[in-house]
Length: 160
Image 1 (cartoon, helix red, strand yellow):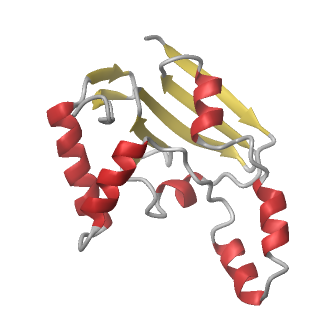
Image 2 (cartoon, helix red, strand yellow):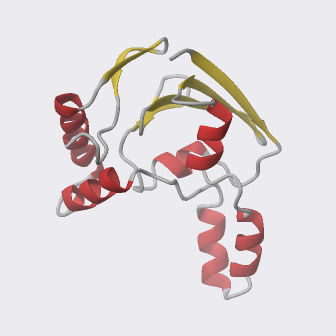
């Protein structure tokens, strides 16, 4: 698989820190340049916010990077419209929306999501990330990506 780049422009409701550090996923790690590198399904991506509405995706994907990104990050859903409707509920909902304005709900692999949920019981995020990383190293496939020396595919229902 060859490395690919995709630039997403005019995207509101996309804040990498909100998405990757909210506790919904555990295979994304923050890099020194403030980007995030993660493994999901048979893909490895680095995500960097260029400016308020421009995001750069760089990685190795099974298939076209644009299609992979649009599916995984739920880019066909209008989060701005959802937030607009929810903000009318009350001031507490409005505060919550403002606090997490850049969150998107990721379309994660069901098997990994279930295992992550089970592991999360009585654990903190760094420990959950470590456990999932060790499982992935034990059962996943290796992939080389220029931003990292070696990453691992997340394990999916087809592995175990």
